Amino acid sequence: MLSSTAMMHVDPKAGRLREAAYTASPHYGPRPAGCAPELIIIHGISLPAGEFGGDYIHRLFTNTLDTKTDPRFTYLDGLRVSAHLLIDRAGAMTQFVSFNDRAWHAGRSVFEGRAECNDYSIGIELEGTDDSPYADIQYERLEQVIIALWDAYPSLAERKLAGHCHVAAGRKTDPGPAFDWGRLVSRLGVTLPVVQAVEGEQ
Image (cartoon, rainbow, N blue to C red; front, top):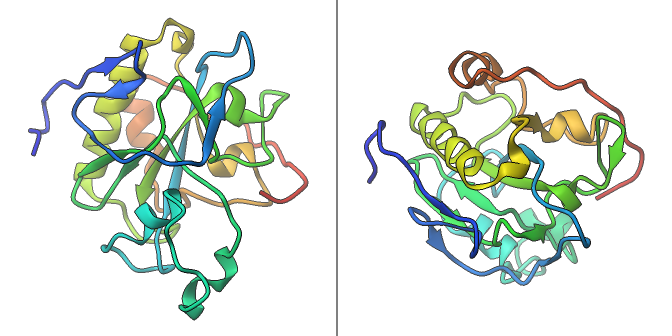
């Protein structure tokens, strides 16, 4: 396990975080021509809802979650989603999609008047819920990852961060009120985004 002060490294050619385990997701595609990462979007996820641990999130992102035999997951039937990176409650990190590719994490979304955030964003999932405090180690890992991404991608020079709740307001609420945005503001020197409502479903 990394120490809280350890530096992380992203290989921009491969789009890979060196310190993360890698499990390939089939739910991705190329970014549109000329699109590079310009925004980092923070999400919260738990499967089953409100429960932590297990490999259900990994199964969801790799299209191996059996939604037909477990009533807790029937609402996910047919859903094809992924994220670039997952940080679990213990701080373990798994990458599912290259940062250079388009992961399917934001759905219908808009940031600063620009739609389709998946095209130009990196999605980071934290294992958690809207109303449960996230773990300190998750914040530490998240901060380290963000800094590594800023170092690797000149296209992220404006240091734009948002929550799923900011780019899909009215449709998504994560990472929720329990997420400490003030910590990122003070430690990373970023500003909070403006919430913009988006119609439609993921």
